[in-house]
Length: 114
Image (cartoon, rainbow, N blue to C red; front, top):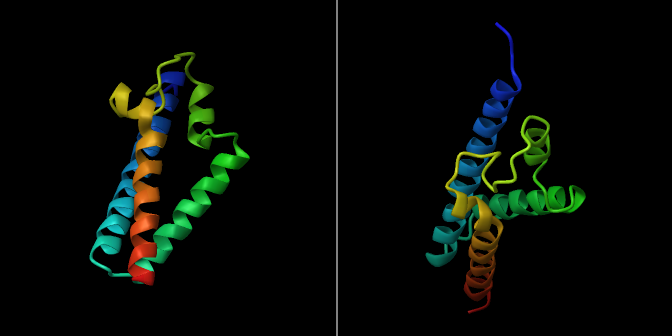
């Protein structure tokens, strides 16, 4: 069996989508925990994961490393060429999730200092 660029792109897209799903679980748990004032270890681990993600994005100039790997196997300029998401969601992903994360931070701070 020959491994083609399309097979490699499919693999990267699958991994990227799984990572995206993982971070969705994390961020929505964080939102839930902050809203109900459950400031437990999992909330702080979530903050650590997002801090790690932010550092990675700074190092790679606002690109996910998986996007850079996928770029080797595609010349598409579509925002979802590297992940199994609708175009609009891939295009606005950073804005949407940054907004949610900022909301979580504010709710967490409110819960701490109320």
